[in-house]
Length: 287
Image 1 (cartoon, one colour):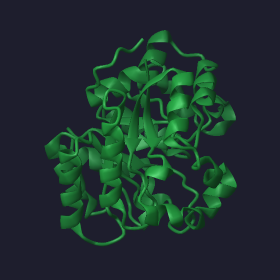
Image 2 (image 1 turned 45 degrees about the vertical axis):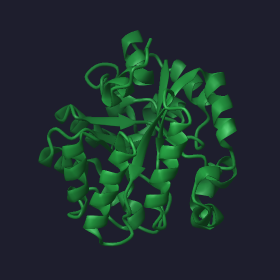
Image 3 (image 1 turned 180 degrees about the horizontal axis):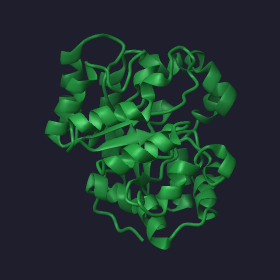
Protein backbone atom coordinates (compact mmCIF):
# COMPACT_ATOMS: atom_id res chain seq x y z
CA UNK A 1 0.00 0.00 0.00
CA UNK A 2 1.28 3.45 -0.93
CA UNK A 3 1.42 6.11 1.79
CA UNK A 4 1.64 9.77 0.78
CA UNK A 5 3.43 11.35 3.70
CA UNK A 6 2.39 14.94 2.96
CA UNK A 7 -0.89 16.19 1.54
CA UNK A 8 -2.40 19.60 2.13
CA UNK A 9 -5.89 20.00 3.49
CA UNK A 10 -8.18 20.77 0.52
CA UNK A 11 -8.63 24.54 0.39
CA UNK A 12 -12.41 24.22 0.58
CA UNK A 13 -11.95 22.88 4.12
CA UNK A 14 -9.75 25.78 5.28
CA UNK A 15 -11.16 28.62 7.43
CA UNK A 16 -13.05 31.04 5.19
CA UNK A 17 -10.77 33.97 6.11
CA UNK A 18 -7.79 32.07 4.71
CA UNK A 19 -9.53 30.87 1.57
CA UNK A 20 -10.53 34.39 0.61
CA UNK A 21 -6.95 35.73 0.76
CA UNK A 22 -5.15 32.73 -0.68
CA UNK A 23 -4.40 33.97 -4.19
CA UNK A 24 -2.94 37.32 -3.14
CA UNK A 25 -0.38 35.65 -0.87
CA UNK A 26 1.03 33.24 -3.47
CA UNK A 27 1.86 35.21 -6.64
CA UNK A 28 5.35 33.72 -7.03
CA UNK A 29 4.18 30.20 -6.19
CA UNK A 30 1.46 30.58 -8.78
CA UNK A 31 4.01 31.73 -11.36
CA UNK A 32 6.27 28.73 -10.69
CA UNK A 33 3.77 25.98 -9.86
CA UNK A 34 0.35 27.19 -11.02
CA UNK A 35 -0.71 26.80 -7.41
CA UNK A 36 -3.78 29.04 -7.39
CA UNK A 37 -5.35 26.86 -10.08
CA UNK A 38 -4.36 23.52 -8.55
CA UNK A 39 -5.67 24.32 -5.07
CA UNK A 40 -9.18 24.53 -6.46
CA UNK A 41 -9.26 20.74 -6.39
CA UNK A 42 -11.71 19.48 -3.79
CA UNK A 43 -11.82 16.73 -1.20
CA UNK A 44 -13.81 14.64 -3.68
CA UNK A 45 -11.11 15.25 -6.29
CA UNK A 46 -8.49 14.07 -3.80
CA UNK A 47 -10.44 10.92 -3.02
CA UNK A 48 -10.87 10.07 -6.69
CA UNK A 49 -7.19 10.73 -7.40
CA UNK A 50 -6.04 8.52 -4.51
CA UNK A 51 -8.28 5.68 -5.63
CA UNK A 52 -7.07 5.91 -9.22
CA UNK A 53 -3.42 5.97 -8.16
CA UNK A 54 -3.74 3.20 -5.58
CA UNK A 55 -2.72 5.33 -2.61
CA UNK A 56 -4.06 3.76 0.57
CA UNK A 57 -3.11 6.30 3.23
CA UNK A 58 -2.34 10.01 3.34
CA UNK A 59 -0.89 12.29 5.99
CA UNK A 60 -2.81 15.57 6.02
CA UNK A 61 -0.67 18.52 7.13
CA UNK A 62 -1.97 21.81 8.50
CA UNK A 63 0.54 23.67 6.35
CA UNK A 64 0.21 27.43 6.15
CA UNK A 65 2.55 30.19 5.02
CA UNK A 66 0.74 33.29 6.25
CA UNK A 67 -1.75 34.49 8.83
CA UNK A 68 -2.61 33.41 12.37
CA UNK A 69 -4.78 30.45 11.45
CA UNK A 70 -3.11 27.54 13.24
CA UNK A 71 -5.86 26.96 15.79
CA UNK A 72 -8.64 26.80 13.19
CA UNK A 73 -6.52 24.79 10.79
CA UNK A 74 -5.65 22.19 13.41
CA UNK A 75 -9.33 21.65 14.11
CA UNK A 76 -10.15 21.49 10.40
CA UNK A 77 -7.48 18.85 9.73
CA UNK A 78 -8.73 16.79 12.67
CA UNK A 79 -12.28 16.93 11.33
CA UNK A 80 -11.11 15.87 7.86
CA UNK A 81 -9.09 12.97 9.26
CA UNK A 82 -12.08 11.86 11.37
CA UNK A 83 -14.09 11.35 8.18
CA UNK A 84 -11.75 8.51 7.15
CA UNK A 85 -9.43 7.65 10.06
CA UNK A 86 -8.27 4.37 8.56
CA UNK A 87 -6.90 6.15 5.51
CA UNK A 88 -5.81 9.50 6.96
CA UNK A 89 -3.39 10.76 9.60
CA UNK A 90 -3.19 14.38 10.74
CA UNK A 91 -0.31 16.76 11.42
CA UNK A 92 -1.05 20.01 13.22
CA UNK A 93 0.84 23.28 13.20
CA UNK A 94 1.72 26.31 15.35
CA UNK A 95 1.43 30.08 14.99
CA UNK A 96 4.78 31.57 14.00
CA UNK A 97 3.76 35.12 13.15
CA UNK A 98 3.93 36.35 16.72
CA UNK A 99 6.38 35.86 19.56
CA UNK A 100 4.24 33.75 21.89
CA UNK A 101 5.94 30.59 23.10
CA UNK A 102 3.15 29.67 25.49
CA UNK A 103 0.64 29.76 22.64
CA UNK A 104 2.80 27.54 20.43
CA UNK A 105 3.23 25.00 23.22
CA UNK A 106 -0.52 25.02 23.82
CA UNK A 107 -1.12 24.43 20.11
CA UNK A 108 1.16 21.40 20.15
CA UNK A 109 -0.70 20.03 23.17
CA UNK A 110 -4.05 20.67 21.48
CA UNK A 111 -2.84 18.96 18.30
CA UNK A 112 -1.93 15.93 20.39
CA UNK A 113 -5.37 15.95 22.00
CA UNK A 114 -6.92 16.05 18.52
CA UNK A 115 -5.03 12.90 17.60
CA UNK A 116 -2.46 14.48 15.30
CA UNK A 117 0.71 12.40 15.01
CA UNK A 118 2.97 15.36 14.29
CA UNK A 119 3.51 19.08 13.86
CA UNK A 120 4.30 20.88 10.61
CA UNK A 121 6.48 24.00 10.86
CA UNK A 122 7.47 26.36 8.03
CA UNK A 123 9.92 28.78 9.66
CA UNK A 124 11.26 30.84 6.73
CA UNK A 125 7.82 32.01 5.64
CA UNK A 126 7.56 33.81 8.97
CA UNK A 127 11.10 35.14 9.04
CA UNK A 128 12.34 32.45 11.42
CA UNK A 129 15.04 29.79 11.27
CA UNK A 130 14.79 26.08 12.01
CA UNK A 131 16.97 26.66 15.08
CA UNK A 132 14.95 29.66 16.27
CA UNK A 133 15.25 29.84 20.06
CA UNK A 134 11.47 29.93 20.55
CA UNK A 135 10.95 26.87 18.36
CA UNK A 136 12.99 24.78 20.78
CA UNK A 137 9.97 24.90 23.09
CA UNK A 138 7.90 23.39 20.27
CA UNK A 139 10.48 20.69 19.68
CA UNK A 140 10.67 19.93 23.38
CA UNK A 141 6.94 19.45 23.93
CA UNK A 142 6.61 17.46 20.69
CA UNK A 143 9.41 15.24 21.88
CA UNK A 144 7.74 14.73 25.25
CA UNK A 145 4.46 13.83 23.57
CA UNK A 146 6.04 11.43 21.09
CA UNK A 147 5.08 13.51 18.07
CA UNK A 148 6.95 13.87 14.77
CA UNK A 149 8.08 17.34 13.65
CA UNK A 150 8.06 18.07 9.91
CA UNK A 151 9.92 21.19 8.80
CA UNK A 152 10.07 22.99 5.49
CA UNK A 153 13.67 22.85 4.27
CA UNK A 154 15.51 24.25 1.27
CA UNK A 155 14.29 26.62 -1.40
CA UNK A 156 10.90 28.30 -1.26
CA UNK A 157 9.38 30.80 -3.66
CA UNK A 158 7.90 33.27 -1.21
CA UNK A 159 10.76 35.81 -1.62
CA UNK A 160 9.74 37.81 1.45
CA UNK A 161 12.22 36.14 3.81
CA UNK A 162 15.67 34.59 3.27
CA UNK A 163 15.71 30.83 2.78
CA UNK A 164 19.00 30.40 4.68
CA UNK A 165 16.99 29.73 7.85
CA UNK A 166 15.92 26.38 6.44
CA UNK A 167 19.39 24.98 5.74
CA UNK A 168 19.69 21.31 6.82
CA UNK A 169 22.70 22.07 9.02
CA UNK A 170 20.27 23.96 11.26
CA UNK A 171 18.24 20.75 11.42
CA UNK A 172 21.41 19.08 12.66
CA UNK A 173 21.41 21.44 15.64
CA UNK A 174 17.85 20.46 16.52
CA UNK A 175 18.53 16.74 16.10
CA UNK A 176 21.61 17.05 18.31
CA UNK A 177 19.63 18.81 21.03
CA UNK A 178 16.77 16.27 20.85
CA UNK A 179 18.34 12.93 19.89
CA UNK A 180 15.05 11.04 20.27
CA UNK A 181 12.85 13.53 18.39
CA UNK A 182 11.74 12.24 15.00
CA UNK A 183 12.27 14.96 12.41
CA UNK A 184 11.29 15.15 8.75
CA UNK A 185 12.93 17.53 6.28
CA UNK A 186 10.13 18.39 3.88
CA UNK A 187 11.18 18.90 0.24
CA UNK A 188 14.56 17.26 0.87
CA UNK A 189 16.41 20.56 1.49
CA UNK A 190 17.49 21.23 -2.10
CA UNK A 191 19.85 22.87 -3.10
CA UNK A 192 21.77 21.53 -0.08
CA UNK A 193 21.49 17.87 -1.04
CA UNK A 194 24.95 16.90 0.22
CA UNK A 195 24.35 18.55 3.57
CA UNK A 196 20.93 16.89 3.82
CA UNK A 197 22.52 13.51 3.16
CA UNK A 198 25.12 14.15 5.84
CA UNK A 199 22.52 15.19 8.44
CA UNK A 200 20.32 12.18 7.70
CA UNK A 201 23.31 9.84 7.79
CA UNK A 202 24.41 11.33 11.12
CA UNK A 203 20.94 11.19 12.68
CA UNK A 204 18.80 8.06 12.13
CA UNK A 205 15.92 10.09 13.62
CA UNK A 206 15.95 12.45 10.62
CA UNK A 207 13.91 11.50 7.56
CA UNK A 208 13.23 13.50 4.40
CA UNK A 209 10.36 13.68 1.93
CA UNK A 210 10.26 14.68 -1.73
CA UNK A 211 6.89 16.46 -1.67
CA UNK A 212 6.15 19.09 -4.30
CA UNK A 213 8.92 17.81 -6.58
CA UNK A 214 8.78 16.11 -9.97
CA UNK A 215 10.57 12.80 -9.26
CA UNK A 216 12.03 12.54 -12.76
CA UNK A 217 14.40 15.41 -11.97
CA UNK A 218 15.74 13.65 -8.88
CA UNK A 219 17.55 11.09 -11.00
CA UNK A 220 19.17 13.64 -13.33
CA UNK A 221 22.85 14.10 -12.55
CA UNK A 222 22.79 17.82 -13.32
CA UNK A 223 19.81 18.57 -11.08
CA UNK A 224 21.88 18.81 -7.90
CA UNK A 225 20.15 15.88 -6.19
CA UNK A 226 22.92 13.31 -6.78
CA UNK A 227 24.57 13.50 -3.31
CA UNK A 228 21.28 12.59 -1.64
CA UNK A 229 19.83 10.28 -4.27
CA UNK A 230 23.04 8.23 -4.41
CA UNK A 231 22.35 7.24 -0.78
CA UNK A 232 18.59 6.66 -1.05
CA UNK A 233 19.08 3.18 -2.45
CA UNK A 234 21.43 2.09 0.30
CA UNK A 235 22.49 3.98 3.45
CA UNK A 236 19.36 6.17 3.66
CA UNK A 237 16.78 3.71 2.35
CA UNK A 238 14.97 3.69 5.69
CA UNK A 239 14.73 7.48 5.95
CA UNK A 240 13.18 8.51 2.61
CA UNK A 241 9.47 9.24 2.26
CA UNK A 242 7.15 9.44 -0.72
CA UNK A 243 5.12 12.66 -0.68
CA UNK A 244 3.34 14.80 -3.23
CA UNK A 245 2.49 17.99 -1.34
CA UNK A 246 -0.87 17.58 -3.08
CA UNK A 247 -2.35 19.53 -4.82
CA UNK A 248 1.09 20.72 -5.94
CA UNK A 249 1.91 17.34 -7.50
CA UNK A 250 -0.52 14.87 -9.04
CA UNK A 251 -0.37 11.37 -7.55
CA UNK A 252 -0.42 9.39 -10.77
CA UNK A 253 2.33 11.51 -12.26
CA UNK A 254 4.49 11.29 -9.13
CA UNK A 255 4.10 7.51 -8.86
CA UNK A 256 4.80 6.96 -12.55
CA UNK A 257 7.97 9.05 -12.38
CA UNK A 258 9.19 7.20 -9.28
CA UNK A 259 8.56 3.89 -11.04
CA UNK A 260 10.85 5.05 -13.84
CA UNK A 261 13.74 5.53 -11.40
CA UNK A 262 15.82 2.41 -10.87
CA UNK A 263 15.69 1.37 -7.21
CA UNK A 264 16.02 -1.89 -5.31
CA UNK A 265 12.59 -3.45 -4.65
CA UNK A 266 13.15 -3.18 -0.91
CA UNK A 267 14.03 0.52 -1.23
CA UNK A 268 10.98 1.22 -3.35
CA UNK A 269 8.71 -0.51 -0.84
CA UNK A 270 10.18 1.50 2.01
CA UNK A 271 10.05 4.79 0.08
CA UNK A 272 6.48 4.36 -1.10
CA UNK A 273 5.00 3.42 2.25
CA UNK A 274 7.08 1.28 4.57
CA UNK A 275 9.07 4.11 6.13
CA UNK A 276 5.98 6.25 6.69
CA UNK A 277 4.16 3.32 8.27
CA UNK A 278 7.07 2.72 10.64
CA UNK A 279 7.48 6.40 11.47
CA UNK A 280 3.81 6.89 12.33
CA UNK A 281 2.94 3.44 13.64
CA UNK A 282 0.38 2.88 10.89
CA UNK A 283 -1.37 -0.46 10.80
CA UNK A 284 -1.31 -0.70 7.01
CA UNK A 285 0.11 -3.44 4.82
CA UNK A 286 3.07 -2.33 2.72
CA UNK A 287 4.35 -4.23 -0.31
